[in-house]
Structure formats: structure tokens, C-alpha cells
Amino acid sequence: MTIEMNSTESIIGRAEIDDIEAILAVVGTEDSDGRHVVHSDYDTIFTWDYEKGARPKLNKLYEKAKGAQWNGETDLPWETDVDQEKLAVEAAAAQGGFAVGFDVTGTPCEKWGDNEWIQFSIESQNWTLSQFLHGEQGALVCTGKIVESVPWIDAKYYAATQVMDEARHVEVFAKYLDEKLSGHYQVNAHLRMLLDDIVSDSRWDMTYLGMQIMIEGLALAAFGFARELTPDPLLKQLLRYVMADEARHVAFGVLSLQEYYQDLSAAELRERQEFAFEAAVRMRDRFLQQEVWDRMGVDTKQILPLVLQDPNRPAFQALLFSKIVPNCRKLGLLDAADGWLRTKFTELGVIEFESAIDTSEEYDAMAAVPPTKRDLD
Ligand SMILES: [Fe+2]
Ligand SMILES: [Fe+2]
Image 1: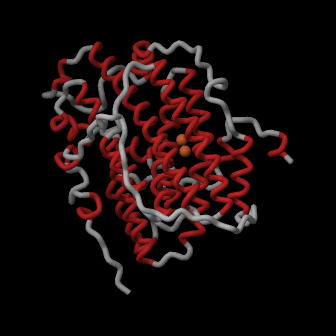
Image 2: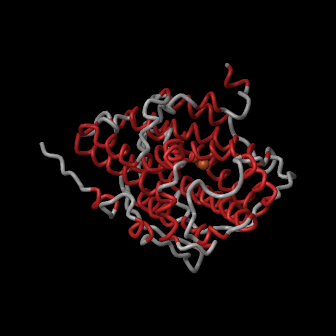
């Protein structure tokens, strides 16, 4: 049997991964009515098999989720004063001063003083939290779709709790942006492209792969990174609570796909590998923060090649993918088709944490809400 192999160009729209012109050619535009409509054709599946616990691991996850709900309005210290400028100065001091990790000679940043770097840091914070917010809405919508499209009752039950979790995440990130920060960014063009691809795919397992494995896997690592870096106690706690939920969500993806992938053909697995690769490239592109440079008046065509060569970048990227790669390995996606995805992840510079622990059982250790009596029984 021959498996149809797509080229890098046909999967991601460019032959060279670091082709800046092509990356910048993907532009997002604000929809004038504040909405973004994506059409999708997929089957909504009713199941008449109500046997609860037919999939014990999903059932266990569902029972955990019921006891781990928190309230974004009342469980977080919203009275905390957030002074973005002060936080920017503190964060810079902790890293030995302002400036990025690469040589800015010959760029407008060469002439920047503390004021411009503080503004850059504030914009970067506004941008980061805005993208977290949009990603959370993506998770809300995608998981609502999983409730409809997944055929197993235990998965429908679990996904329903995740829908509630995601509503809470959208709510708390929106509140933090509105009340504590100083500006919004629209959804990054690459993130939006990825969300569109995930939500319009007709195959229910692709929603899981795109959202639970790729986007939420990256979110789990990115939230952990942001939590380490921020001196703001409110944001630290907010991220702590959100991460406890995200660890369950990623486990939900791994446990569900593990079963489903067992029966897929080599050709079908290859399609999943290509989808994972495409998602990884979109997420890597999104972290170039092109909108922040734009807003600071720096030509993105000039600065992004330098950003790509930042000596700190490889370690940061590997860390962002430190949940995704072991989970792809656990699902057999790294090794299928002669290790095609391993090669691709190596080219992308994200393979480093291949052997790290996968997320299928990690959620207990990350739980934020003390176990209720029912959990202990
Ligand atoms: Fe979330
Ligand atoms: Fe999530």
C-alpha cells in the first residue's frame, strides 16, 4: 500500500520553515461586526449506550473534574493592585536589564531607552494575555463540538465539564485584561488560522488532536512559564488554577486518542502526523509576536529574522513544546511512518523533551483544589 506523502509546502504553505515573507503574508483582519464565522460540516452523534464507566480512565477523569470546579469571581484575589510598569521594571531587573537577547544594532530598537523598553514589555504582556484569552475561546468552542461529535458517553460527560472549565478560563482572562492590563490585541493571524482549521475539520478526533494535544499542550507549558516569570500574585494564582484544569484537558486528549488511534491505518495516522506538524508550525509562528513589533513601530520584516536567531529562542521553544512532544510519542505519532513527525519536530527545533513524562496521568499532581471527600472515597 502506498501512502500519499504531502510536501512541507502543501502542508504549511511554504517550503522553508523560516521564510519570513511567507509568515508575514498571513494577516488577520478584525471582523467589523466583532464576529468570526467558520463553517463546518460534521456528524453529531447520539449514542444510546449509556453505560457509565465503560472507559474507566475517562470516567475517573470526569469524577475528578466534578470535584475540581472553582469560581473565577470568588476564588481569586481580584483586589490585588497590578502596576504593569512596576512589574515590567521588576521582571527586567530579575533578568539583568531590558533589551531582548539579540543584537539590535541597525534597527530602531538601537535607540530605545528605558521608556521604550518598558512600553515594549507592557505591550508584550497585553499581547500574551490577549492570545491566551482567544485560545481559551477556541477551547470552549472546540470542546462544545466534541460533546456533540464524540461517540462515547464517558467522553461526552467529561467534555461537558471541560466546556464549563473553558467558560471560566475565558471569563478570568477577559477580566484580568479588562481590569488589570492596558490594552487588547486581536487574535494572532497564525492562531486564528489554526483554530479555523481545527474547528472546520469534520473528523472528531482531529478536534482533539488540534485542541487537547497541540493547543492545550502548548498552553500548559506556556502558562507554567508565565507563572514562573510574573511577579504578580494575582496572575500567579490565576494561572495555577487554570493549569490544574488544563492538565486534565490534555489527559482527556491523550486517553481518548490512544484508544482511537489503535484502529487507524498507516495512511490515516500519516494524516494525523501532518496535522500535528501544521499545528506546531502555526504555534511557532504565533510566538514571533509580530503584532507587538508592529504596534511599537518596528518593521517586522527587519526585526523577525533577528528574533528567529535569538540565542535564547531554541531553549524557549523546546520548553513550549515540552508537553506536546511526549504526548505525541505516547500516541505513536512520533514513530509512525518511519518517524516522519520526529524528523519534522527536529527540524522545527522542538524535539528536546521527547522523553519527558507524558500528560495522561499528570493531572493529579497538578490539582489546585484540595480533593473533596468524595475523591478520597
Ligand atoms: Fe482553558
Ligand atoms: Fe483547556
